[in-house]
Length: 356
Image (tube, rainbow, N blue to C red):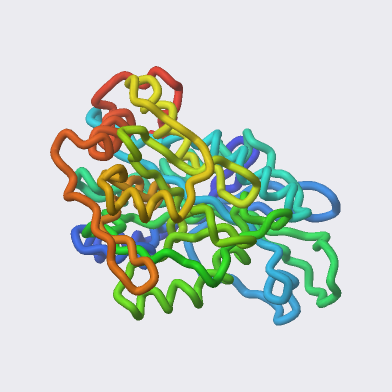
């Protein structure tokens, strides 16, 4: 049945797949909810949006994105709070970042109000898919790709924007083992490192696989010019506690400005923790692990939120970090974030947006 909501066409699924889905045992990113949002860009304008049953796409072999990777995406989450409501965490920040990505990749910007209302409606419709438990959420994947059937190298004239949802639990089940990457590079000055485009991630697959073959979860990316400065941890921003200071690489055009990163910095400063955004050298971290100045490290991103790092591999040696104590700043910050998302404390920043 097709219904028409204000500025949106909605076709609901006839039979939900939820009753046959085991939400207690989920592999991250493998299970998807009943519906998806679609909006096409054609003739210089965004067309009427629609929500329809989740399903496959039919694409021409000449679809431009398949050849030149003109595609961007976002990652965000919805949570069920203590009051039983389903809420989104900082969706406006994700929307703004996606439009920055669109500008850099020569793609049309999305109307923020349509994006947000479509997102909220989609989450409302599939809110029953939120798993139970403190580590449970709906992972939301908005993305846009060049949809022209054309194989010349040029920006597309047509685009498709979509959102789909995946019920998830914790991303990492154990502290991370990461390897310092001193040969391959994730991003270059003047490149696309500060935006979320598909090519950034494709280029990292080979060195990531090499690290995994050596027993690491992912790598610590270093700068492309000298491999002297630490930039990111796999697909996450990275933080260290150095001499008691929460320290993270400064944004310089090659590092993605993470929403979780910004939230952590905001909360840490409000809590009175000492915080620094600056260049962090490989030498400083390696020496700090030896002399005790580096007492903790963690990755931060939407999927994992906060992922403690237990081991850093460097030139064939594993350098271990101390086990986190219950009063560690890392665990404190993680709890502060979760308390806001779950409605256990007041949201004084306007970060939480109700979807249902």
